[in-house]
Length: 466
Image (cartoon, rainbow, N blue to C red; front, side):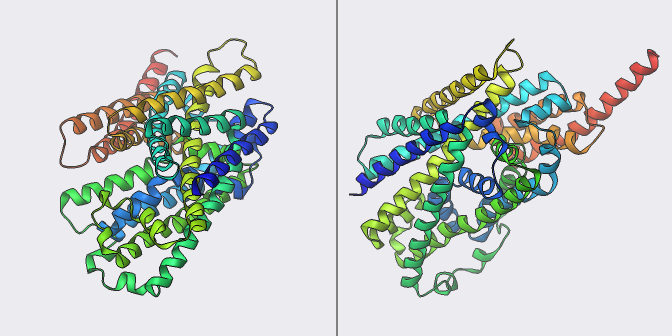
């Protein structure tokens, strides 16, 4: 029965994609939904893209183990990032009428930096998408009985179809429905759990004092991990394309900013629910501790505590979360490929051809993601490494370029090169302090020093050539 309703739901998702495709007339319709998204759509698509399988299955295990310090790094960090973007970045960038973040690098610096930043941005996504495909495959295996290998292809195919045909419009509409599914499933499970625990207080009252600390209670390594996670999820996420694809899709500047603030609220509030459910589940069933790093606590609770209709709703919500993350993550690099690597260098390219190339880029991203999904490589490690690379290479030239008039090409190149090289060397030599911290500091310092050097060189050249 569960498998039947899941299949119906997946077919409904594809139907939404076909319906949304009727709105696609131009490449802007495909990549930015024709710049027509309201505040609620901006917020929900932001939330849905960042709310994936790890928020339901991964975060609760960290919360059970590390307490509220993990709540800061895993939950509050994403909300803080969106608030920062809404308060300081969105207005300036929206007025520039951009399609991708990498357009900014071309306008502010030059085309070679645009290409370099585009390649770095694109390389960050396949590993993240691959992790979602694997999570979908395991769910299909558990619920429907499909082998993992076939599940990866089926999951990829579903996301590719509705993203390919409907673009940002399909992502927006499916995100809306999937977010409702997610919220309903989590609220029903939370209410059932709290009925059995007699409220919130019993869950927290027996926790040790360090559990409630917002900062790590360990030594240097614990603080290093804590700071590195905050840097990655607050600062490192500031330049990523999936945020600005929604900002630039907003119908006006106000909708973009308010959507970011509303999205931050959704991300903090709704993402907190699985953590409470996980902790309450361990309170009711202590034997759940130690099973697969505690990542199957919530699915086990669903199967143990709830009726079949609730199980259908929960698994539909979980699949929804993964589909939303996959589609948003897939459209972002496909847009960068079309807008920044094909459009500037294809002579006499019509808008219809650009739309086709961007759609084909969706398939290309999906194929590369499937490769990593089948690979034995540690996908989670690769995702962290890729996001760290964006932080240590792109954050400084992006932020300094937006807010500091003296930022220039020399500073940007040094920031990208020295920041990335510092991070890589620290990663190879396994430094005690997380490589992300060293790389971020090196990148920011190089941006400032390099910009002064570039400014001095430019002044000297103007003086010698009056």
